[in-house]
Each structure stands twice: as structure tokens, then as C-alpha cells.
Length: 416
Image (cartoon, rainbow, N blue to C red; front, side):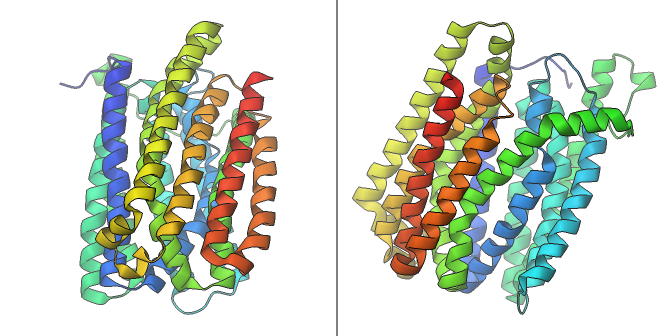
């Protein structure tokens, strides 16, 4: 029988960690499927689609989930978040179409980008239901959804690529898989929990109710816009090297870089689980002005992030070539020096992510764009200087530089 009783921080972390690990692993397996059944060019095309759509979707998502999860005063109701998310997702799809028209992409690439955009739109709708569940500190339901979505994605993508050798049909399969999970699990499960919260199963309020209160939506948009801008800048910071690689080196080199860079996600998954699970607790400590408790929890999280990063660097130095050869092919293993640099960048970014969760919990929101905008500008300049001259290694070195700058910026934001 489903209950609304919040889980402990340990159980929430365990569920979040499990869900994120399985989902991230499934995302990586999809890249492996493309690398094994397709070509590096196909991996590059898929990566380009993600790189084009991600900044747009993240900006328009406004990071509403973080606002929901830390809305301890219940300033807004779910209908406000859901209504705003529908509006911004529609705007995001229109912007992606505009980017495709302006980008001058050839062949199947425009259709791959558009289809990935549709899949991301479905994901953004699921995300607002995740925000509701996270607010109730029931990360188990989110984890189950992510696991189901990840496993189903691998199945449909593998079948589509194997039968057609066409990336478009593979991405269409992702759209179908994510829509099935949204309609058959996310919405019904969240509605059931809302009914229990109302304590009146005969007059259950549906989470699908919309509320077009213009002033409220504008106020919520203004409150969350800085975080949306921050997430867009974070995505741009991640994807800028990919844009420059595609521009100067081509989709094949982009595919190699993306496949190797995805190994960073191993640590990112743990850090994300930590941050999402600890965000409500950090927000309460900050709201009650319990500085000692806030700092202790933050230091624990930072220590874990640092340990993960150090472990990744050591593994890449000792066994990087063997790992790449085992996971992909000798074509990828030739770039083991690239893996080391990417792991150094990842180690710095793990700490940055933890500091970002802490800054959001303390409502240090409106100055985060300043830190990230500075980081993106440095990323663009370093990529412009390094990628044409030193290739993929230059792109990795750029990521090391920008990760260090972002970490120092968030540290400054929290201290001062």
C-alpha cells in the first residue's frame, strides 16, 4: 500500500543513487550500442543532437524541480509548476526548430535533432512530477521511473538500430519509450500520492489540473529564471567543446570525444544523487539558520565528491587504455591521454556541483548566473584557442580550466 511518509536521508540517497546509476548506465549503454552497431559518425550525430537541444530545454525548464523540492513554505501549488512547464516546453520546441533552421545541418542531422528535442520535451514533463515526489522526500518513486525509462530506452534503441541501421528510427524509439513511462507510471503514481495527501479518496484532486494565474506564473518564472539561466550556462559549458569539435574536426572526432567523456558520468551520477537527496535537508538547515549543521553536511558532500574525482583520475592513469579498449574498441583506446584530462575536469566539476546544490538551498540564486557566465566565456575563449591547434586534447584542457574557474566561483558565492 502506497504511503506519503518521507523516507530517511539514507534511504532517499540509496534510491536516488540506484535510479541515477541505472539510468546513467543505460545512457552509456546506448552510446555503446551506437558505437558497436553503428559508427563514430553516428555517435557524433547523436551527441550533436543532445548538444543542440540540451541548453534550450534546460533554460526553458527553469530548474523548476529544484524550486519545488526546496519550497518549504509552499508558496506555489503543483498546478502552477505544471502549467508553467507546459508553456516553457512549447517555447523550447519552437526554439529548437529555429536552431535547426539557422544551423544549416545536412542529411539526417536536422531530423535527429528535432526528434531528440521531442524526447527531451517529454522528459521535461516527467521532471515536474519528479519535483512533486522529491518535495515529499519519496525518491524511491523517481528511481523506479528512471530505471524503467532507462531499460526500455536500451531495448527500443537497440532493436531499431539493429533492424534499420538508421539513427532517426532509434531516436523515435526513445520518444515512444519515454512517453510510455510518463503516461503509464509518472502521472498515475503521482496522482495516487496526491490523493493520499488530500486524505479524501472520494474527492481526489488531480495533479493534471491547470491553473493559468498570470501574476503567479510570472512571479514563479521570475523566481526560477536565474536557475534556468544557470542550467543553460552549465549545459553550454559542457557542450561548447563539442560545438568546436564538430566545427573544426568533424562528427567522427566528436563521436570519439563524446564516448570517452561520458565516462565522467559515473561520478556525476553519485554526486547528483547526493545533491538531490540532500537538497531538502540543506534547505531546512539554511531556512532555520542552523549554520553549523549546514556546513557539516556540506563538508561531507564535498569530501565524497573529491574522493570520487581522485579515484577516477587514478583509474584513468593506471588502466585508461585497457578500459577504453574493453568498453569500445582500439579506435577509442588510442585516446587514453584524453581520458586522464577529462577525469581531472570531472573531479573539479563534482565539487562544483555540490557547491551549486548548497547555493540553491541557501537561495543564492540570482548571482549564480554571474559565476556561470564567466565560466562559459572562458570556455568559449579556451576552446577557440585550443581546439583548432591541439584537437581533442585541447578540448579536454579547456574543460579542466573552466571546471576550476566554476569551482572557485561557487566557493566565493557561498562564502561571501
